[in-house]
Image (cartoon, rainbow, N blue to C red; front, side):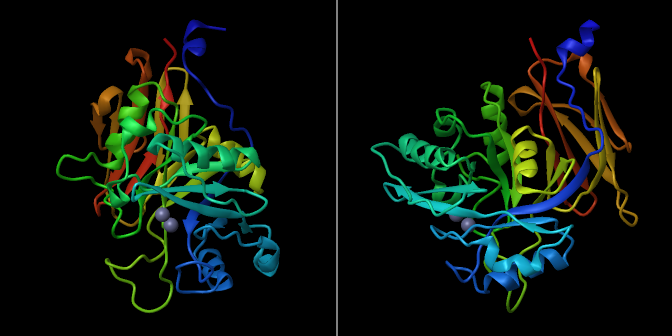
Length: 316
Ligand SMILES: [Zn+2]
Ligand SMILES: [Zn+2]
């Protein structure tokens, strides 16, 4: 094996497809405005391949919605395990869990997050940490001490979650870069956190279709999607679609799907969130051979939508 192939983590993707999904949305089973079948149908009708109905401390049995499932659309069971510590919201999604989980609390903020993560892991579910800036609950200083979590919301479509941070508080992408720089292997997801499927679609309402992920897997089933998610084999998006991501031993290539006459800018970002390079080409290509730590790419289109690739980790 040449030295370069040892130095970079190069995944194998033979026979894989991209599956679009949303892992965070609500129904009338908690504080959403529409019944589960209406919510699931919205996603199926809008080209999604999977959705997780993640109601607050309520588990919805996908078997009750089996009529909606076909070869291109599945429901993955889940719950937004909804707790708090000293009035700070602690919301952790449990994906692919077999039954409801009671929310846990602890004597510290970190401990409260950890107990909910652990409760999800105990029944072989996959946890994701939700909207750190909702209620200005926590940031990287707290999340750095949480263990056994691989997924963090870096974009949430709900209007009151403060994705961009503000004042002294970091935005979600900045929190992510801090964690990555500190050596935590965590991947960024984009979600809807939709509550409003009826009535007006407006900026100040929690409507669907705002944030999603595309997972590269060889088949569409819950276990395959979970495995690839936790391996970072996906990108997060608010509107930009990718044809392909190629991680060659010394190159990261981002092949962007051209939509209408949109133009695209790709930033390659590394340790401490530093922008290492910016390009307007498609594919966007970055030479990894001079890098250390991690490199991730972020594509922005001329309308302001993004795609966030997962970091490539470079072995010391
Ligand atoms: Zn929440
Ligand atoms: Zn939610």
